[in-house]
Length: 503
Ligand code: MV4
Image (cartoon, rainbow, N blue to C red):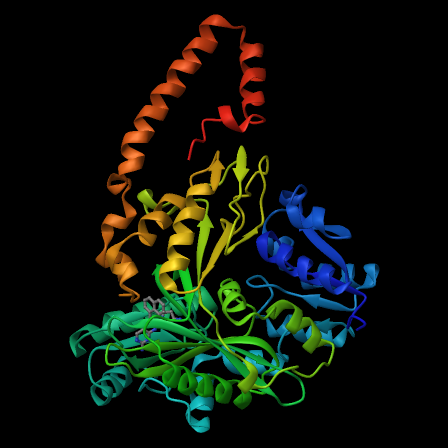
């Protein structure tokens, strides 16, 4: 089969740019990378057939510049642009600008992006389509209006920004006395974060699970779903671990929420891969939250369980292809877990820890997928998201996937920057995680997961390793010339048996 395009531009960086480039190359499509001055040595620049510098490090001057990206598309002769996630991926103005320039946007139509981008509008659209939404209000006029709606809905309620997402501008309100100050706070945060102070109310769902359904729609009116992902292990709206399937969803529930998601996608004229986010209350009820009109970071867990390549499917659909399967031919097999390996220090409140990666060793072996965007020697720029790599494991069941993750995390070594690897390992062996007792407050409920003190192998082995390192350094400093010491250390990386990485 001839590929749908000869050349595709990837308007992104890091692991997702690499992921899209890999799909293109497997399809026989030539690739065009764009990069900022901070990414001259980045992996996506090395992997693409062509690469164009588009500006200085800040994304507002590079990866978010619609004019520069369209200019590169024109100069390079790319027929389509894949936006990845983040940056311009949910910007309907960018999708429109592509359309106006005669370039295919590998994603949904701008009209669908716009309809789902406004939380009040998408709630209305879903209500009309018969999709369950959390009881709520229209946009609020003032604090008095808020009290009136809150009393009708019943406390606790949640103030949300209409243009929001990611938890910004949200406030939990437990009584009418709290309304005036929290209303003003939510409005102010909505204005400063989104340039739109519109806020509305929803019934607050306590201790919810975050469950999302993957959909795929073609431009001919067909839409299917690939079950759910459970993304409840997150901190301040940053997801850290995702899995598929969810430990609490049976086949019947999956069919119900899958049909909900397909109805939601069809109601907004959706095309391409998309995700319908839902909340599951402690009572087991599901509610539509929002639709993410892009490829998501955690798409690989769905790919592993359903045996589908979502990025290739997006590109085929953008070229006008029909879905090659119907819902009854889609079946799950086994279980997959993803850990987001980030350059942050979990013991210091997930403080960003960019820097130069001195050495990196990726895990491999049965059931392991490693989607990385960095390599040993690369300097992680401070300007962007600190995601270094995604580690995904597959197993015949959840326990096997978790055991493989623990083993793969033990194989993974990132030297030079602080990472979340040890944190992820603690979660994988934690009794509550293994029991599948997940909800969005999981990390607050298990604060011991954020501390290094519970790592027996770390506290003992690390002290020993530090001592060995200390005495070796002393030896080098006293017995050799400084230059010779540097050479000796560099050569250690070439000899795995003496690297000090014994695990
Ligand atoms: C909620 C909620 C409880 N009740 N809405 C947070 C970000 C945005 N996508 C929706 N969010 C929530 N909306 C109602 N009516 C709780 C959250 C929420 C949350 C949702 C998903 C994943 C993690 C979360 C962490 C805290 C709060």
